[in-house]
Image 1 (cartoon, one colour):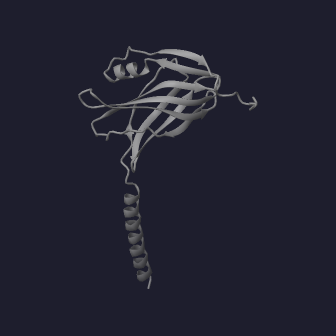
Image 2 (cartoon, rainbow, N blue to C red):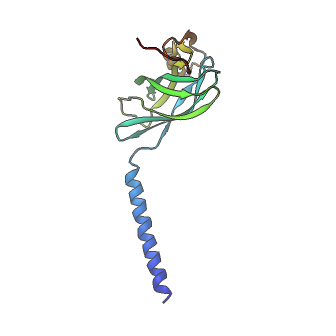
Image 3 (cartoon, rainbow, N blue to C red):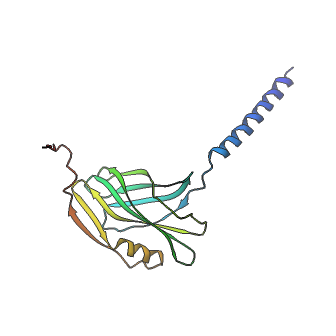
Length: 181
């Protein structure tokens, strides 16, 4: 009498595991995340850690952690992503802006959405750089960031963009009231 319930439980467990496995395989139709090489400019207040790009349905997602190494809250980033083939030729280029509310001296994970228009090949290398960091009071602009990122993708690690700072006159400081006329 003990054998029937035990066999029944084993069969049920096998059916459940098989059903779960096939459901999981169908649900995760996206490809494995791919590593992205980040080009760090030490004069910028933001750094990106462990960037990985994946494709869900028709949309690309760049998962990463952003570190704020300044004493100012950050509001956004302008990013550059290059797709390079095995011969070193540029296959794709994306520049886009993302909102990244990040407190001073903190780190936070984000899922960015670059509009990559070329299909990614398994042999492609992906490089990421920051073009601009928008802070509550300051905007940091890396002049020549795309040129430096392209040189970095070729192995030329001595080309570094010149970082310029500007006062952020567009985003109000917290606690400041804006009076609309």
